Amino acid sequence: MSKITKLFFVLLTLNFLLLASRFPLFAQDTTDPNADYLRDATKEKVRDQIQEDSALSLDNPKRAFAGEIIKITDNQVTLDTPRLGELQIIIPATVIIIGQNKAKTTFDKLQIGDYILAMGLLSSTTQLEGKRILVIDKPEPENRSIIFGKISDISKEEKVLTLKNEKRNEVYSLEIVSTSKMTKKAADKVTNIDITGLKTGDQVLVITTPSVNNPKMLSVQMLRVISAASQAQNDSALQNTPTP
Amino acid sequence: MRKEIFIAIIIGFGLGLAITYGIWKANRTLQSNNTQTIITPTPQVQRDSALQNTPSPSGVILGIIDPVDNSIVKTENITLKGKTTPQAQVGILYGGGEKIVEADIDGNFTADITLSGGNNEITVTAFDKDGNQNRKIINVTYTTAEI
View 1 (tube, one colour):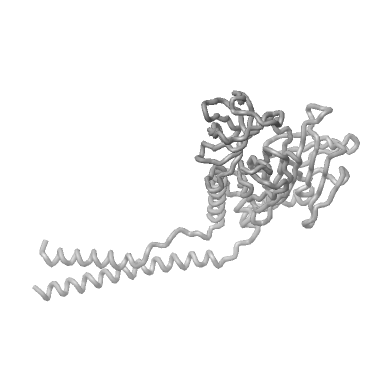
View 2 (cartoon, chains in turn cyan, green):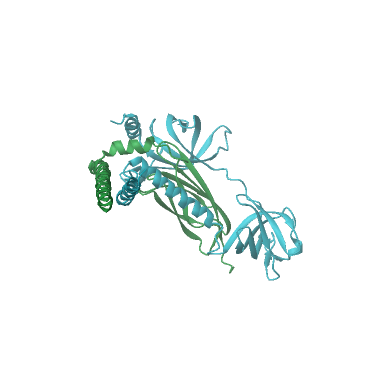
């Protein structure tokens, strides 16, 4: 190949690279609503994670952790916390320890199996410098539950509702008791209602406790009609409308 | 010899320009198509439908902004602030009671809560209108003692 031909190809390549790089390829389309939604969801997820991480952030180190003592050494105890796992609590000489009888006690009185609330300064993500320690009763598990569904049946005489959660394919029997607080939101205003204000097809959110009288039933503590029967049907119809 | 080199440079430059013009034209056409997407108004129902059909990676979004998990507060009454799916229904369980609130169109929600002395477990559950749910639990300690 002659020198001229080589030179020609070199110049051609240089021209191509220099001038073509002036116009970058068009970026991804960011106007797609699905892409927007996924981006927002990702942002929220990240924010959520940051919030979770901030539970162990050292920016504001004053923290309190409840848990069961599983190990005791010379100057520290290991707590088994319900949601964060094991946590070391350093016990300095200045720590204040309050026993279950609300009286001050000493470190040597703490025992494995004691349930404590340790307040202090977080010195690392798994270590707390104890300032005040309370020996407390182990908390009872939460017996209330929050359920969501559509009213499929109402017995106004027995004051019993049947609620169906189609998503989970679950059916609940709910009794309305004298302490049940029921509300409905309409036109941005929340109003109190009684059983006569409920209709089959209403979409509701209910906070319940196990029934004292019937183990198969739940007692309504609080009920909110989210979407009235006709509106719920409209929403459902709207969802089923095929997108053009 | 010099004349041939000069001709080669001119031809190379010309070809480079021609190719560059082709790329520029193609990019411009693509840009024009995307601009059209921006201008075209999307009907609200269609947009809502698109959002509903988009599979969310983890269902309903839920984050508790304040108070921070395992924090210590000195006041009995606090305002719980969080973020969830727009207009989701949020049920809150805490030692002193329970609340149901609705998130605004941006997904923000708040609830005034009265704490008991000591450790308080707060359970927050958000539901979207299809019944999808997400739950978060935080612990907040109320004490007047200096830590």
